[in-house]
Length: 340
Image (cartoon, rainbow, N blue to C red):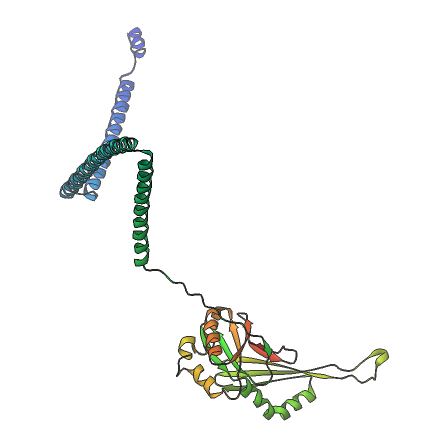
């Protein structure tokens, strides 16, 4: 019986075949699960898109709106085509009429030429003169119609204002000082603030005895303050000239500061009969006829109004231009204003 046992062991085992079948079945199961999961996701995505997108009613409304717009555009296109066809027909009719008129004109000219040729030399000369007179009369009628048309038109008149420039003279004595900024004009109490320095002479002298510089602020008067700085120049001499007397000089520098950047009134209102500037000029007319305008770049157009008003009232005007960061100032080394 031994040989039988050995032959049985040489055949493939039943267990190995079952393992292979089991592996194949497992792979098939995995594939089915994967395919099913993918299909489930696809269904879910389709449902989501269908729920997010427009429903059938909205799509139908959009389709109807598109059809309505297409019908309207087709109707407008048809109307335009009709108009184009009508214009083409009118153009053809006018062209035909023009050809007929040219032919008629040519026939008339030939007939007139034949009639002229039948005349004598003297009659031909008279005919030519009469024809020329007729053409000139037609030209004269055309010119008369053009003249009447031009006379009936409204013409635009451009007014150019010419302002004379008088000779400039240096201002000696008091003057009225104006500040123009942001389209506003205000009167600077120049003389009034300077007069307050007399009451502070003793106090300024005490400061200068202990140091070479003294600073005081005066005002406010009519919304302006004046900052006065006194500086003493010169000093002791050293070296070979030691002990020599040196002349010391007192330098003054005054700066006029407004209480607010928006000081003043609008120029047009200030120049009215009851405006602040008009009233001030009227009250100080006897004291001085000279005006100094301190003008910033943003108020050059308003300066023209002030200039015209002052010249009409008999005042002379000096203009000082200031930069955006500049203040009205006066001092020992300043320059005198020249008024026109």
